[in-house]
Image (cartoon, rainbow, N blue to C red; front, side):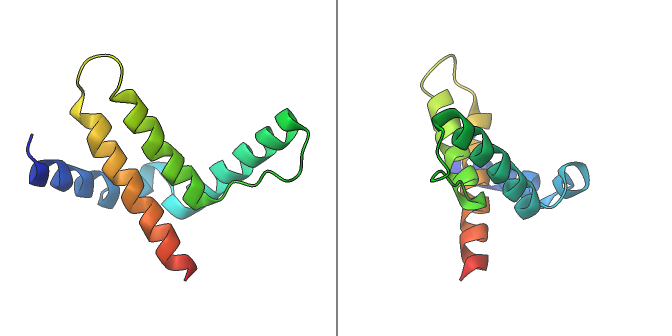
Length: 96
């Protein structure tokens, strides 16, 4: 799969019916951020830990990149990383 094909596949995923299945992506990432923040606050016994929706999307990019380092090649890891990067950018853009 070449670069434009990866990006077109990403557009299909991020811009498609996912919202019908998973709900609004910003709302979803905000929910994940609250859960991750609560988990980390409990784990580290600190209220200083706060994860944002943008952090969630960025850390998911890192997860996808980590997956490229193990196992066999899976182009979906790169497609998903592009998608999460785009979501992080959208969330950041709406904050301004």
